[in-house]
Amino acid sequence: MNVSKTPASKTAAPKASAKAAKAASPADTPVDADAPDSTVAAPDSPVRHSTPTSTSNQNSRPAVKPDPKLASAWKTKPGAELTDAEVLAMPDGEYMNDKQVEFFRAKLTQLKEDILSNAGETTEHLREDTSIVPDPADRATIEEEHALELRTRDRERKLLKKIMQSLSRLDNGEYGYCDETGEPIGLGRLIARPTATLSLEAQQRRELKQKMFGD
Image (cartoon, rainbow, N blue to C red; front, side, top):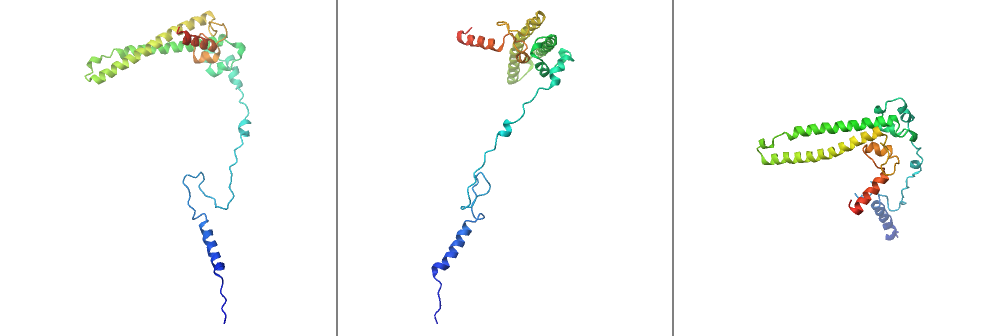
């Protein structure tokens, strides 16, 4: 009786393919912790490329329109009660009108009062007698604080002088215009620096000249 034998090559192939499939299964494939995704694709799966996000939505945003309430607030409110945004929203043809003059006068006056109040506090601090502090380190710290405060007050003293000059310019009708060119300084610059006497371009030219000639 002849017994048919299956060739070894035919029986070994299914086992090898089964091992290969098991080795290629995602469950047994190690995951790289530094990979950008949390899953790893099988070797035979197609490579997926990320599609860049379209920026058309960002570019298609409508422009922000100015609030009409801000543009007309100066018509119904006193100049001293106007906010910075309301003054900036005023038409260009109303530059340095009575409402803006009143607005900047109130801003300069408030700045002046703040400086004078700080000066009074400095006087009280300087009256502290450092000789009664037993620890030399604490006494040195207090003296250093006093020196720093004096330097701050000195800068404020110079600023106070400019404030008084700006208030005088308001009375003379010269406030808001460049000393060199006579052109408007601009509301944005005046709000940021109420004591400005030069336009931004004139100030840049002066600073450049000072760097070149050391004047």
